[in-house]
Length: 339
Image 1 (tube, rainbow, N blue to C red):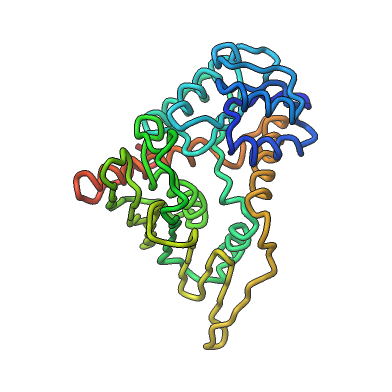
Image 2: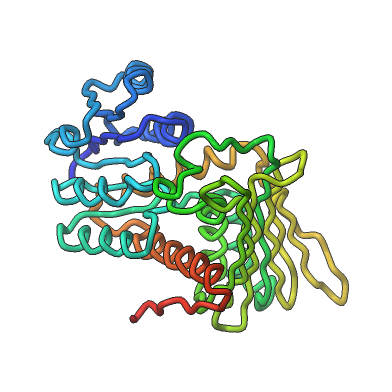
């Protein structure tokens, strides 16, 4: 494929405006040619701000536009699968926000469609691309932390930051609550850091406030092969003053922590802080730009992107297993990559 890559975006909300469009605009090999959103105010704001020549309020018209080479999907969760499948069938490559779908079944359909149409399907797994996460991966790859055996992660939001308004509070549109929304970015980088270990089962527990259609708090224990354990706690209506995100990885020779990054190693019988200098601000912006650059470069060179549909599917499989486990009050196995 020749540069520039002609990109159309569907969904002009906060994620598109704050993360995706700035990253696309900064890539010299991207030409933004179309935008689509049923909200005319958002659509007009985006197309004027970014000088996008073509605009649509109806996705059925947008998907048939032959001037579009690739589509970025930043819509509510329940639209990811049908829009991605339709775009792929009309010959477009697709970059889709996470979660990739509301279920593993939908994610499998998306991946199968991409394979059949010989088009690229890339999930927006950006947290693994943050500079601090990439730094931890270098220590793991260098075996400087020893063998990882336990990781714990969480994203806890205070009740003041959560609103029941909008699609995120509706199961039919969101697909799930706190676990799917907040757990997805945690699983993104945790699964990547723990490779080649693979999850084999999930035990989950959730809590829903009366009148809420989705869970507001969730806890999960993910068991991996290679004797690794990951715990996750997420919530968006807790009695807390501040937003609290963390990730701790413990190995036989050291440990790594996030927010802020800290790395400690055992050296000559002592625990030593070996944390390198990593920029604290702009982690999210940097990660989104890296993802877009990698995606565009892969399409122009006709090579597989480093983030694959299989990565997004695995997160949907874990989410399905979590909800089934919490419903049945049992440990649920994860399908193997071969099954």
